[in-house]
Image (cartoon, rainbow, N blue to C red; front, side):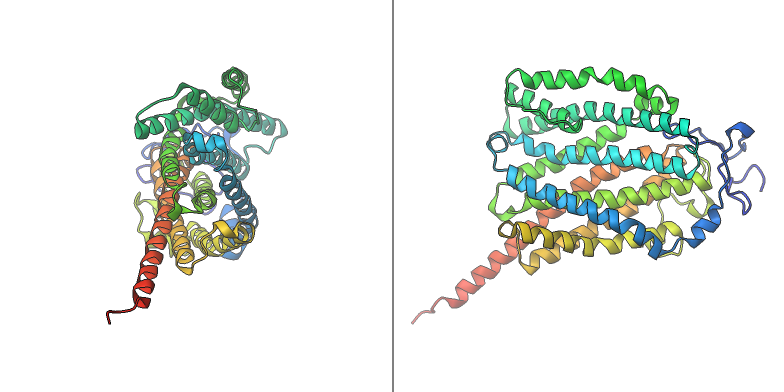
Length: 432
Protein backbone atom coordinates (compact mmCIF):
# COMPACT_ATOMS: atom_id res chain seq x y z
CA UNK A 1 0.00 0.00 0.00
CA UNK A 2 1.65 3.26 -1.09
CA UNK A 3 1.98 6.45 0.93
CA UNK A 4 -0.90 8.21 -0.77
CA UNK A 5 -3.46 5.77 0.61
CA UNK A 6 -4.84 5.58 4.10
CA UNK A 7 -2.57 3.65 6.36
CA UNK A 8 -4.30 0.47 7.53
CA UNK A 9 -3.36 -2.54 9.61
CA UNK A 10 -1.78 -5.41 7.69
CA UNK A 11 -2.51 -9.02 8.64
CA UNK A 12 0.94 -9.45 10.15
CA UNK A 13 1.03 -6.04 11.83
CA UNK A 14 -0.80 -6.44 15.09
CA UNK A 15 1.06 -4.10 17.44
CA UNK A 16 0.82 -0.34 17.76
CA UNK A 17 2.56 1.86 15.22
CA UNK A 18 3.57 4.24 18.01
CA UNK A 19 3.63 4.51 21.76
CA UNK A 20 0.31 5.78 23.01
CA UNK A 21 0.06 8.19 25.88
CA UNK A 22 -3.36 8.79 27.42
CA UNK A 23 -4.48 12.25 26.42
CA UNK A 24 -1.74 13.51 24.17
CA UNK A 25 -1.90 11.91 20.77
CA UNK A 26 0.34 12.90 17.89
CA UNK A 27 -1.36 13.81 14.65
CA UNK A 28 -0.89 11.57 11.67
CA UNK A 29 -0.62 12.36 8.00
CA UNK A 30 -2.13 10.22 5.32
CA UNK A 31 0.54 11.31 2.83
CA UNK A 32 3.60 10.79 5.04
CA UNK A 33 3.78 7.46 6.86
CA UNK A 34 5.17 7.86 10.36
CA UNK A 35 8.68 6.62 11.09
CA UNK A 36 8.74 5.03 14.54
CA UNK A 37 11.95 4.57 16.52
CA UNK A 38 12.42 1.09 17.91
CA UNK A 39 12.46 2.48 21.46
CA UNK A 40 8.92 3.79 21.06
CA UNK A 41 7.35 0.61 19.73
CA UNK A 42 5.28 -1.52 22.06
CA UNK A 43 5.13 -5.26 22.13
CA UNK A 44 2.92 -6.73 19.49
CA UNK A 45 -0.24 -8.60 20.43
CA UNK A 46 -2.26 -11.12 18.44
CA UNK A 47 -5.13 -8.64 18.19
CA UNK A 48 -6.79 -10.06 15.10
CA UNK A 49 -7.01 -13.46 16.75
CA UNK A 50 -8.28 -11.98 20.03
CA UNK A 51 -10.96 -9.96 18.26
CA UNK A 52 -12.10 -12.91 16.18
CA UNK A 53 -12.53 -14.98 19.33
CA UNK A 54 -14.59 -12.38 21.21
CA UNK A 55 -18.22 -13.35 20.93
CA UNK A 56 -21.43 -11.64 21.95
CA UNK A 57 -21.72 -14.10 24.83
CA UNK A 58 -18.22 -13.22 26.06
CA UNK A 59 -18.98 -9.50 25.89
CA UNK A 60 -22.26 -10.07 27.73
CA UNK A 61 -20.52 -11.95 30.56
CA UNK A 62 -17.94 -9.19 30.91
CA UNK A 63 -20.49 -6.37 31.01
CA UNK A 64 -23.48 -7.83 32.88
CA UNK A 65 -22.01 -8.18 36.38
CA UNK A 66 -20.56 -4.64 36.70
CA UNK A 67 -23.66 -3.25 34.97
CA UNK A 68 -25.95 -4.88 37.53
CA UNK A 69 -23.87 -3.76 40.50
CA UNK A 70 -23.77 -0.21 39.13
CA UNK A 71 -27.52 -0.27 38.55
CA UNK A 72 -28.22 -1.40 42.10
CA UNK A 73 -26.02 1.43 43.34
CA UNK A 74 -27.98 3.88 41.18
CA UNK A 75 -31.22 2.46 42.59
CA UNK A 76 -29.93 3.17 46.08
CA UNK A 77 -28.99 6.70 45.02
CA UNK A 78 -32.51 7.26 43.68
CA UNK A 79 -34.06 6.03 46.94
CA UNK A 80 -31.81 8.35 48.95
CA UNK A 81 -32.61 11.31 46.70
CA UNK A 82 -36.31 10.62 47.11
CA UNK A 83 -35.79 10.73 50.87
CA UNK A 84 -33.51 13.79 50.94
CA UNK A 85 -35.72 15.90 48.70
CA UNK A 86 -37.99 16.50 51.70
CA UNK A 87 -35.19 17.78 53.94
CA UNK A 88 -35.50 21.49 54.86
CA UNK A 89 -32.33 22.40 52.95
CA UNK A 90 -33.67 20.89 49.70
CA UNK A 91 -37.12 22.39 50.24
CA UNK A 92 -35.82 25.89 50.98
CA UNK A 93 -32.94 25.88 48.47
CA UNK A 94 -34.29 24.38 45.27
CA UNK A 95 -30.99 24.92 43.47
CA UNK A 96 -29.55 21.98 45.42
CA UNK A 97 -31.74 19.71 43.30
CA UNK A 98 -30.45 21.38 40.14
CA UNK A 99 -26.97 20.31 41.21
CA UNK A 100 -27.81 16.60 41.33
CA UNK A 101 -27.58 15.64 37.61
CA UNK A 102 -24.42 17.69 36.85
CA UNK A 103 -22.61 16.37 39.93
CA UNK A 104 -23.67 12.78 39.24
CA UNK A 105 -22.65 13.27 35.62
CA UNK A 106 -19.36 14.91 36.62
CA UNK A 107 -18.47 12.02 38.88
CA UNK A 108 -19.41 9.58 36.17
CA UNK A 109 -17.58 11.14 33.25
CA UNK A 110 -14.38 11.80 35.22
CA UNK A 111 -14.25 8.24 36.49
CA UNK A 112 -15.22 6.76 33.14
CA UNK A 113 -12.67 8.79 31.19
CA UNK A 114 -10.06 7.66 33.73
CA UNK A 115 -11.13 4.03 33.32
CA UNK A 116 -11.14 4.39 29.54
CA UNK A 117 -7.62 5.90 29.48
CA UNK A 118 -6.30 3.15 31.74
CA UNK A 119 -8.09 0.48 29.69
CA UNK A 120 -6.40 1.73 26.53
CA UNK A 121 -3.06 1.88 28.34
CA UNK A 122 -3.42 -1.73 29.50
CA UNK A 123 -4.51 -3.04 26.09
CA UNK A 124 -1.66 -1.26 24.31
CA UNK A 125 1.04 -2.37 26.76
CA UNK A 126 1.85 1.08 28.13
CA UNK A 127 1.81 0.09 31.80
CA UNK A 128 3.37 -3.34 31.69
CA UNK A 129 6.33 -1.88 33.57
CA UNK A 130 5.74 -1.40 37.32
CA UNK A 131 7.37 2.06 37.40
CA UNK A 132 5.21 3.23 34.50
CA UNK A 133 2.13 1.92 36.27
CA UNK A 134 2.77 4.10 39.31
CA UNK A 135 3.43 7.22 37.24
CA UNK A 136 0.46 6.78 34.93
CA UNK A 137 -2.03 5.89 37.67
CA UNK A 138 -0.95 8.60 40.15
CA UNK A 139 -0.92 11.33 37.52
CA UNK A 140 -4.36 10.30 36.27
CA UNK A 141 -5.80 10.31 39.78
CA UNK A 142 -4.33 13.75 40.43
CA UNK A 143 -5.82 14.98 37.16
CA UNK A 144 -9.37 13.96 38.07
CA UNK A 145 -9.02 15.57 41.52
CA UNK A 146 -8.18 18.89 39.87
CA UNK A 147 -10.99 18.49 37.36
CA UNK A 148 -13.50 17.50 40.06
CA UNK A 149 -12.64 20.51 42.23
CA UNK A 150 -12.78 23.09 39.45
CA UNK A 151 -15.78 21.70 37.59
CA UNK A 152 -17.65 21.09 40.86
CA UNK A 153 -17.29 24.80 41.58
CA UNK A 154 -18.44 25.65 38.05
CA UNK A 155 -21.43 23.32 38.45
CA UNK A 156 -22.53 25.34 41.46
CA UNK A 157 -22.19 28.55 39.47
CA UNK A 158 -24.22 27.06 36.62
CA UNK A 159 -26.98 25.93 39.01
CA UNK A 160 -27.05 29.38 40.60
CA UNK A 161 -27.32 31.16 37.25
CA UNK A 162 -30.09 28.87 36.03
CA UNK A 163 -31.92 29.33 39.32
CA UNK A 164 -31.46 33.10 39.24
CA UNK A 165 -32.82 33.28 35.69
CA UNK A 166 -35.90 31.24 36.61
CA UNK A 167 -36.55 33.13 39.88
CA UNK A 168 -35.23 36.55 38.98
CA UNK A 169 -33.01 36.90 42.08
CA UNK A 170 -29.68 35.71 43.49
CA UNK A 171 -29.06 34.95 47.17
CA UNK A 172 -25.52 35.22 48.63
CA UNK A 173 -26.20 32.62 51.33
CA UNK A 174 -27.28 30.18 48.64
CA UNK A 175 -24.06 30.87 46.73
CA UNK A 176 -21.92 29.86 49.73
CA UNK A 177 -23.90 26.71 50.41
CA UNK A 178 -24.01 25.53 46.80
CA UNK A 179 -20.31 26.14 46.22
CA UNK A 180 -19.31 24.29 49.37
CA UNK A 181 -21.73 21.44 48.66
CA UNK A 182 -20.69 20.95 45.04
CA UNK A 183 -16.94 21.20 45.61
CA UNK A 184 -16.96 18.88 48.62
CA UNK A 185 -19.25 16.37 46.88
CA UNK A 186 -17.12 16.39 43.75
CA UNK A 187 -14.07 15.90 45.93
CA UNK A 188 -15.71 12.90 47.62
CA UNK A 189 -15.61 14.39 51.10
CA UNK A 190 -18.30 14.90 53.72
CA UNK A 191 -18.60 18.12 55.67
CA UNK A 192 -21.24 19.77 57.83
CA UNK A 193 -22.38 22.77 55.84
CA UNK A 194 -24.68 24.63 58.20
CA UNK A 195 -22.02 26.95 59.64
CA UNK A 196 -21.71 30.48 58.34
CA UNK A 197 -17.93 30.27 58.41
CA UNK A 198 -17.45 26.62 57.49
CA UNK A 199 -18.98 26.87 54.02
CA UNK A 200 -16.40 29.28 52.56
CA UNK A 201 -13.63 27.37 54.38
CA UNK A 202 -14.65 24.18 52.58
CA UNK A 203 -14.27 25.83 49.18
CA UNK A 204 -10.99 27.49 50.11
CA UNK A 205 -9.60 24.28 51.61
CA UNK A 206 -10.31 22.13 48.57
CA UNK A 207 -9.12 24.81 46.16
CA UNK A 208 -5.88 25.14 48.15
CA UNK A 209 -5.11 21.47 47.47
CA UNK A 210 -5.28 21.98 43.70
CA UNK A 211 -1.56 22.91 43.30
CA UNK A 212 -0.63 19.64 45.03
CA UNK A 213 -2.57 17.61 42.45
CA UNK A 214 -1.05 19.67 39.63
CA UNK A 215 2.47 18.83 40.86
CA UNK A 216 1.59 15.12 40.92
CA UNK A 217 0.06 15.33 37.44
CA UNK A 218 3.31 16.86 36.12
CA UNK A 219 4.93 13.43 36.40
CA UNK A 220 3.21 12.53 33.14
CA UNK A 221 3.51 15.14 30.32
CA UNK A 222 0.48 13.81 28.33
CA UNK A 223 -1.66 14.19 31.47
CA UNK A 224 -0.43 17.76 31.84
CA UNK A 225 -1.57 18.33 28.27
CA UNK A 226 -5.07 17.18 29.25
CA UNK A 227 -4.88 19.45 32.30
CA UNK A 228 -4.07 22.43 30.09
CA UNK A 229 -6.28 21.80 27.08
CA UNK A 230 -8.86 19.17 28.08
CA UNK A 231 -11.33 21.34 30.01
CA UNK A 232 -13.83 22.07 27.27
CA UNK A 233 -15.47 18.60 27.09
CA UNK A 234 -16.11 18.24 30.83
CA UNK A 235 -17.26 21.85 31.26
CA UNK A 236 -19.67 21.61 28.32
CA UNK A 237 -20.91 18.26 29.63
CA UNK A 238 -21.52 19.88 33.02
CA UNK A 239 -23.51 22.69 31.40
CA UNK A 240 -25.62 20.20 29.43
CA UNK A 241 -26.29 18.16 32.58
CA UNK A 242 -27.29 21.34 34.42
CA UNK A 243 -30.27 21.76 32.10
CA UNK A 244 -31.32 18.26 33.12
CA UNK A 245 -30.99 19.42 36.73
CA UNK A 246 -33.22 22.40 36.00
CA UNK A 247 -35.90 20.05 34.61
CA UNK A 248 -35.61 17.90 37.75
CA UNK A 249 -35.90 21.01 39.93
CA UNK A 250 -39.08 22.15 38.17
CA UNK A 251 -40.83 18.77 38.17
CA UNK A 252 -39.83 16.98 41.36
CA UNK A 253 -42.36 18.64 43.67
CA UNK A 254 -45.37 18.26 41.35
CA UNK A 255 -47.86 15.48 41.98
CA UNK A 256 -47.90 14.21 38.39
CA UNK A 257 -44.13 13.67 38.58
CA UNK A 258 -44.15 11.73 41.85
CA UNK A 259 -41.20 9.34 41.75
CA UNK A 260 -39.08 11.56 39.50
CA UNK A 261 -36.36 11.77 42.16
CA UNK A 262 -36.07 7.98 42.37
CA UNK A 263 -35.74 7.25 38.66
CA UNK A 264 -33.58 10.20 37.56
CA UNK A 265 -30.25 8.77 38.82
CA UNK A 266 -31.13 5.37 37.37
CA UNK A 267 -32.08 6.35 33.83
CA UNK A 268 -29.20 8.85 33.61
CA UNK A 269 -26.69 6.45 35.12
CA UNK A 270 -27.66 3.41 33.06
CA UNK A 271 -27.39 5.37 29.81
CA UNK A 272 -24.08 6.91 30.83
CA UNK A 273 -22.57 3.59 31.93
CA UNK A 274 -23.51 1.73 28.76
CA UNK A 275 -22.36 4.45 26.37
CA UNK A 276 -19.07 4.81 28.28
CA UNK A 277 -18.41 1.08 27.85
CA UNK A 278 -19.06 1.29 24.11
CA UNK A 279 -16.98 4.44 23.68
CA UNK A 280 -14.06 2.90 25.54
CA UNK A 281 -14.21 -0.21 23.37
CA UNK A 282 -14.31 1.83 20.14
CA UNK A 283 -11.44 4.02 21.35
CA UNK A 284 -9.22 1.06 22.22
CA UNK A 285 -10.13 -0.55 18.89
CA UNK A 286 -9.00 2.58 17.02
CA UNK A 287 -5.80 2.83 19.06
CA UNK A 288 -4.93 -0.74 18.19
CA UNK A 289 -5.84 -0.64 14.51
CA UNK A 290 -4.98 2.81 13.25
CA UNK A 291 -3.19 6.10 13.73
CA UNK A 292 -4.85 9.27 15.12
CA UNK A 293 -6.12 11.34 12.22
CA UNK A 294 -6.54 8.28 9.97
CA UNK A 295 -9.70 6.18 10.15
CA UNK A 296 -9.56 2.51 9.10
CA UNK A 297 -11.06 2.07 5.64
CA UNK A 298 -14.00 0.08 7.08
CA UNK A 299 -14.80 3.09 9.30
CA UNK A 300 -14.27 5.85 6.75
CA UNK A 301 -17.77 7.33 7.05
CA UNK A 302 -17.98 9.92 9.83
CA UNK A 303 -21.78 9.53 9.87
CA UNK A 304 -22.34 5.79 9.48
CA UNK A 305 -25.67 4.24 8.63
CA UNK A 306 -27.45 3.25 11.90
CA UNK A 307 -27.81 -0.26 10.51
CA UNK A 308 -24.03 -0.57 10.27
CA UNK A 309 -23.78 0.54 13.90
CA UNK A 310 -26.13 -2.15 15.21
CA UNK A 311 -26.70 -4.84 12.59
CA UNK A 312 -23.33 -6.00 11.21
CA UNK A 313 -20.91 -8.71 12.29
CA UNK A 314 -18.20 -6.13 13.09
CA UNK A 315 -17.01 -6.29 16.72
CA UNK A 316 -18.21 -2.80 17.74
CA UNK A 317 -21.62 -3.45 16.21
CA UNK A 318 -21.81 -6.72 18.13
CA UNK A 319 -21.00 -5.01 21.43
CA UNK A 320 -23.63 -2.31 20.70
CA UNK A 321 -26.28 -5.03 20.30
CA UNK A 322 -25.23 -6.67 23.55
CA UNK A 323 -25.52 -3.37 25.42
CA UNK A 324 -28.97 -2.66 23.95
CA UNK A 325 -30.17 -6.12 24.98
CA UNK A 326 -29.19 -5.30 28.59
CA UNK A 327 -31.37 -2.18 28.80
CA UNK A 328 -34.87 -3.62 29.31
CA UNK A 329 -33.92 -6.54 31.63
CA UNK A 330 -31.71 -4.19 33.65
CA UNK A 331 -34.36 -1.52 34.05
CA UNK A 332 -36.97 -4.13 34.98
CA UNK A 333 -34.74 -5.48 37.74
CA UNK A 334 -33.93 -2.00 39.06
CA UNK A 335 -37.62 -1.05 38.89
CA UNK A 336 -38.58 -4.15 40.88
CA UNK A 337 -35.93 -3.42 43.54
CA UNK A 338 -37.22 0.12 43.95
CA UNK A 339 -40.82 -1.10 44.03
CA UNK A 340 -39.95 -3.47 46.88
CA UNK A 341 -38.30 -0.68 48.89
CA UNK A 342 -40.36 2.38 47.95
CA UNK A 343 -43.57 0.95 46.53
CA UNK A 344 -45.69 3.87 47.73
CA UNK A 345 -43.54 6.35 45.79
CA UNK A 346 -43.40 4.42 42.52
CA UNK A 347 -46.02 4.54 39.75
CA UNK A 348 -47.12 0.94 39.39
CA UNK A 349 -49.29 1.29 36.29
CA UNK A 350 -48.44 -0.83 33.27
CA UNK A 351 -48.64 2.31 31.14
CA UNK A 352 -45.83 4.00 33.06
CA UNK A 353 -43.65 0.87 33.07
CA UNK A 354 -44.06 0.49 29.29
CA UNK A 355 -43.19 4.13 28.60
CA UNK A 356 -40.29 4.00 31.07
CA UNK A 357 -38.75 0.97 29.36
CA UNK A 358 -39.28 2.58 25.96
CA UNK A 359 -37.60 5.78 27.17
CA UNK A 360 -34.58 3.83 28.44
CA UNK A 361 -34.30 1.96 25.14
CA UNK A 362 -34.55 5.16 23.06
CA UNK A 363 -31.98 6.91 25.24
CA UNK A 364 -29.37 4.13 25.00
CA UNK A 365 -29.93 3.58 21.26
CA UNK A 366 -29.35 7.27 20.52
CA UNK A 367 -26.28 7.39 22.77
CA UNK A 368 -24.68 4.28 21.25
CA UNK A 369 -25.13 5.64 17.74
CA UNK A 370 -23.67 9.01 18.79
CA UNK A 371 -20.75 7.16 20.42
CA UNK A 372 -19.86 5.64 17.06
CA UNK A 373 -20.18 9.00 15.30
CA UNK A 374 -18.25 11.01 17.88
CA UNK A 375 -15.45 8.45 18.22
CA UNK A 376 -14.88 8.53 14.46
CA UNK A 377 -15.09 12.32 14.35
CA UNK A 378 -12.63 12.81 17.22
CA UNK A 379 -10.22 10.23 15.82
CA UNK A 380 -10.42 11.90 12.41
CA UNK A 381 -9.41 15.15 14.15
CA UNK A 382 -6.47 13.35 15.85
CA UNK A 383 -8.17 13.69 19.25
CA UNK A 384 -8.30 10.85 21.76
CA UNK A 385 -11.88 9.54 22.12
CA UNK A 386 -11.01 8.42 25.66
CA UNK A 387 -10.90 12.08 26.72
CA UNK A 388 -13.16 13.88 24.27
CA UNK A 389 -16.19 11.61 23.77
CA UNK A 390 -17.32 10.29 27.13
CA UNK A 391 -17.99 13.70 28.80
CA UNK A 392 -20.18 14.85 25.89
CA UNK A 393 -22.07 11.58 25.78
CA UNK A 394 -22.69 11.36 29.53
CA UNK A 395 -23.87 14.98 29.56
CA UNK A 396 -26.24 14.29 26.68
CA UNK A 397 -27.34 11.10 28.43
CA UNK A 398 -28.25 13.06 31.57
CA UNK A 399 -30.26 15.63 29.64
CA UNK A 400 -31.92 13.10 27.35
CA UNK A 401 -32.72 10.74 30.22
CA UNK A 402 -34.27 13.51 32.36
CA UNK A 403 -36.37 14.81 29.46
CA UNK A 404 -37.62 11.34 28.49
CA UNK A 405 -38.34 10.45 32.11
CA UNK A 406 -40.36 13.65 32.61
CA UNK A 407 -42.32 12.81 29.44
CA UNK A 408 -43.01 9.30 30.79
CA UNK A 409 -44.53 10.71 33.97
CA UNK A 410 -46.49 13.36 32.08
CA UNK A 411 -47.92 11.00 29.43
CA UNK A 412 -48.76 8.37 32.03
CA UNK A 413 -50.51 10.96 34.20
CA UNK A 414 -52.47 12.37 31.25
CA UNK A 415 -53.60 8.93 30.09
CA UNK A 416 -54.62 7.92 33.59
CA UNK A 417 -56.48 11.21 34.11
CA UNK A 418 -58.32 10.73 30.83
CA UNK A 419 -59.21 7.16 31.76
CA UNK A 420 -60.44 8.33 35.14
CA UNK A 421 -62.61 11.02 33.55
CA UNK A 422 -64.06 8.48 31.10
CA UNK A 423 -64.83 6.13 33.98
CA UNK A 424 -66.54 8.87 35.98
CA UNK A 425 -68.56 10.11 33.01
CA UNK A 426 -69.53 6.54 32.12
CA UNK A 427 -70.80 5.82 35.60
CA UNK A 428 -72.72 9.12 35.94
CA UNK A 429 -76.52 8.72 35.61
CA UNK A 430 -78.02 10.14 32.44
CA UNK A 431 -80.99 12.53 32.27
CA UNK A 432 -84.27 11.02 33.32
